[in-house]
Length: 369
Image (cartoon, rainbow, N blue to C red):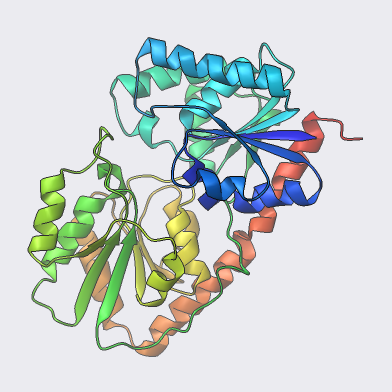
């Protein structure tokens, strides 16, 4: 069977869909990837997949460019004739579903968070709602990453109940992300891994770092790409100020995030809303306590008092208080949180659960000989 993965970046496929791609390849399925070219394109091609350039501007509302993207997907579906397309992020979900109306390809969408639609009131969010309503009439199945997203989405966009499923995000490879020893360091190091956009809570994290600027026993690290093209990116001057003032240590990117997690004590995510945040899954799999905002997506991975602490979203004071609470714990209490993090992902977020869910959905909509 030929299976297409459609995403907004090759980075998305490499970081979040690797296990699923390799699962299909191991079965002898043919995999093609539709995504724009980026620094991860050659890496996914090395897996033995066929990559087809599909240029996409994530925040564009230019009708000509949008129609060109739609036609590109249509032409590939017509020429390559994949039996199935697995799609990720808003535009691939919408346009692949629309194209499935005119092609035999069945589409399984993954709605990984509702930030653009429900956290903003701009033109892109409104347009996405309209297009989703039309497109999802033709999708064959839709996965959501938490029940809150499912309920909110389906309250605004009708999707038949038999076409809906829940998965634990992208899951986590428990063999790759093994538990790391938690030791008492002289300095407690907080770590946030995220794109530098407002809705991820980057400013709240910086405010918390500022509050501890005179405490030599605490350090803050921020890892993530700065995207000047994103409409909700933080201001570059802000980032430079945080660094210059010594509030945070900044690293734009890392291909070995496990090494960074190993050198830190706590993973922090002050996001305003999530699907199932990969950064928390990776931290938990490596046996690290977690601090996250009490919002959909985060609260599925962080159980308050069990493997970390939840705080109020958009509230740096609440985040600071939970950081102080963590700092007040004994080393044994911190280790207990760390061990619970690993146990939680082993039980609820194993990547194998995602693979099984996709296989079940595929067998519902395609008769495999």
